[in-house]
Image 1 (tube, rainbow, N blue to C red):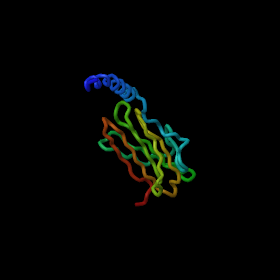
Image 2: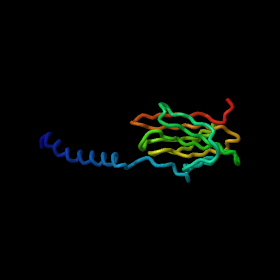
Image 3: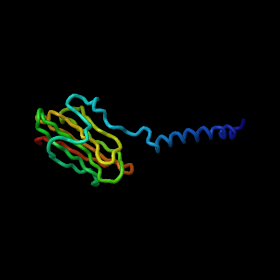
Length: 153
């Protein structure tokens, strides 16, 4: 069998594999899903469809594609809750991430959403400040933002 005949035999197999991969990618298979609230480490919770408390700050994302809204609730040990909002039409990949500033552990919600990611909580806000980050991806580019809340520096 010549080399050309062997290549001709492989073309249908390669085409079939490419078709399956394209179907999975464009058909939505393997799309990111929300964080499972049952997996949240101690001191963290979410995602939830809203945040308790009062709005304390709004952090813009790069190029104004969206923003991060942060709420504070002083009940108990105090909590910060944050959500990333999208200013663009349609669904986009986005994330919101929170962590106590003195901890390495963080908690997040990431997925493809049409309006927002989150809300994600971190408790202990009466003692610790929090670091909040988020991003929205538009046309393959991530536009991020964030900062610290409740810190004295």
